[in-house]
Amino acid sequence: MIKTRFGRRDFVAGAASVVAAPAVLRAQDYPTKPVRVVVPYPAGGGTDLVARLVVPRLAERWKQTVVIDNKGGASGILGSDIVAKAAPDGYTLLITTSAHTINPFTTKTLPYDTERDFTPVTTLVMGAIALVGSPKAGFDTAEKFVAAARANPGKYQFGSTENTTRMVGELFRLRSGLKIENVAYKGAAPMMQELAGGHIPVGLTSPLTVMSQHRAGTLKMLAVSSGKRLAELPDLPTMAEIGAPGVDQSAWFSMFGPGGLPSALAERLRDDCVAVLAEPEVKAKIRDLASEAGGESPQAFAQRITRELATWKEIAKAAGIEPE
Image (cartoon, rainbow, N blue to C red; front, top):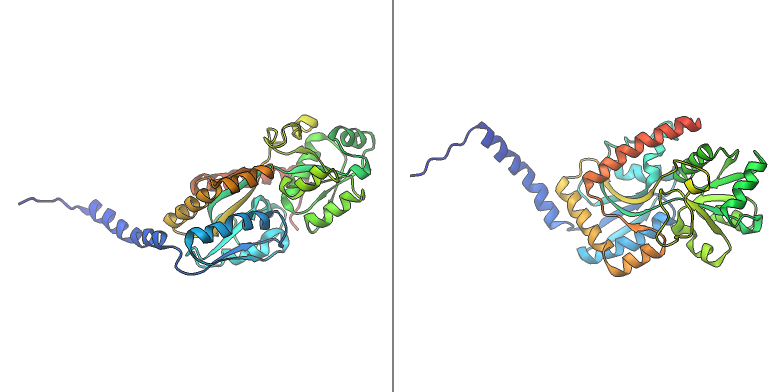
């Protein structure tokens, strides 16, 4: 007869495994019904582009209906709030941008807590913010714009489309010492129309939203906010290289679940996203958009969120930005 010692510690561990088991089972069986992916920006923008690249392939893997629900407004806040208040069962997800970590410092009252009310799943597409020039306004190189802005303090502006581009623009302004002011637009499309017409000299947006115009020559990317040059555009300098030392800010499109999403389910979602991002057609499309595939673990992504919240808080303070 074999005797087994089963003390209090063993009982607690056993009980914990029983509690955890349903989450593991849900992750293995998931999904058993349609999934809703909220995109908190209008159709046709960069976030929507990433969602429509990834989501249909997730639907194929899951053999389940997955609906993209565009709920634009307030720099992603309105759509994000839907997910923050959803059940943490994996059937309501969010694909959003790095504005998620900036909104707390530009918006006086958020309807949710940026860390507590969301579960980071993974990064999908990693990139930078591009400073885009208007050839019609005479700015097809970074050197021309920087020289003109230094010679004429206060004459020129930079366009921004949401809080990520605004904050990167403010950081560029601070680090370069240029006297340029922000002009806010409600989306990338109207800003790029103004740029193409020469009505504003430069603007900031994601490379993936301006790549076709850059290649056609109607607009020109002048520099990027990342710490190193983009592999797809090796001739494009960084902002640090054109006179804004210390600018090293990535921009991302990522997936979140509601706060309290079981860790096993977050890992399952991340693994499926990584599998989609590894597909040759998806990899080629992301690379063609001067970006890189993501795939961070939920834990690493959560750490990124914490770091970025601290960084953007400092930048907002230095730029004198008050939440509105």
